[in-house]
Length: 449
Ligand code: ADP
Ligand code: ADP
Ligand code: MG
Image 1 (cartoon, rainbow, N blue to C red):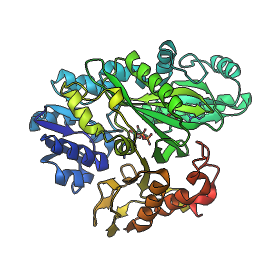
Image 2 (image 1 turned 60 degrees about the vertical axis):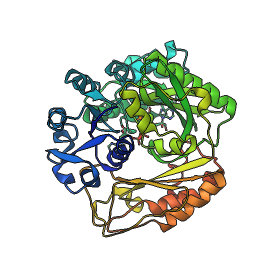
Image 3 (image 1 turned 45 degrees about the horizontal axis):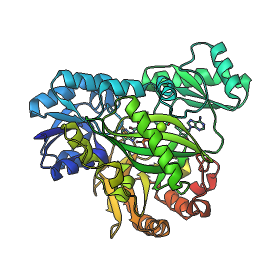
Image 4 (image 1 turned 90 degrees about the vertical axis):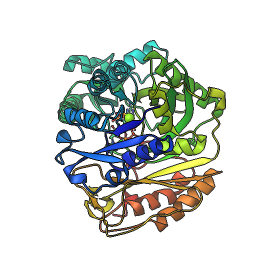
């Protein structure tokens, strides 16, 4: 096992990774930007190094500074968390060249899945059902038109390099296609430095159901069931649950096997997630996220498997300790993303100082967060400040627990989406499990505005 790991991230995921390292007896090195001097991950790591100014390009995305920090601290491996450099194949490759283990898949697997258009083509070849659409990226308007006509409207224009719901446009009529492509290209260029786009049939009212995978370096691949992430605002996840209320054991097996085929097709190693759209009993591959995901804790609660510790073991060259038959899903878990934002003002981010804080607790409540009383929520980064997770033997009890936990959660100094989450968890349709990916956008009243 590694003696020391550097965490190339911040916030709650950095804290989460430091905890996993601690449990495995690994020493930790944190990196931080000038804006994060007093962040929790800096305080709890064994050592911490400033890697640059607040802007992410100068700090958390600054590859030379991060590798210099590895050299200075003697870290043998880097955990990239999610976001930032987690899906950057060039970073993974540079780490390898510098003799630092990248805790994740090989750069080749990341490259194959990182281009979503190319990944879809590869998945088709691996007998994984994909959303109908263009074969790879479209280079001309005529090509796009032909692909859209073939798929049938409505269609989605999607950025090949996309992530975080960015660079995606729905198009209902042929005459709107060109404008959507221009808009998606612009956004994709700005966010990902790559403006290539592809066309996909718009699946009406599907659910977003994703499968968690673990794979080691010896060709063992297992799946750990699914998460339902259909509760989304503008294609961004808000609340997730495990298992999905729409799943049957047969469907779980079929989707799990398709996800395993996807992982095998790219020689995958580490933890990863295959995202599907589920419509009735049909499911379609959307993309693979080659990293730990925000919502990984709900799978951990239901399966009892620590995914971050598994990543560390796999990266250290150890074989998976579990086989498919060992994976049992038991009970139900829900995650609410707590953001510093104001739902009444169009979810405007609300940075500032947290001057009073009370977080809920009790049996079955888990909080992954990096906030503490007096801490500063920086305007430079993501507005997610905590993840509240409720686990219980049944879905009903998990919902009940989450309601009380949200009601107990007190944050003063910044605006939060806690009341919005409370409205959501109390919604009869959500409680009944009858929601699809468009549900939140069709329910403006939930914001309380
Ligand atoms: P996930 O796909 O892990 O469920 P999202 O889809 O909401 O999470 O995340 C969107 C993108 O933004 C992903 O690339 C994720 O890695 C990144 N991201 C999400 N939250 C954060 C954060 N707090 N800091 C940095 N990056 C983040
Ligand atoms: P990202 O890389 O930004 O996470 P995804 O391909 O995962 O992009 O899509 C983000 C979300 O957009 C999905 O979770 C889903 O809600 C919606 N979406 C994506 N593709 C389609 C589609 N073809 N039809 C309907 N909804 C879609
Ligand atoms: Mg996605």
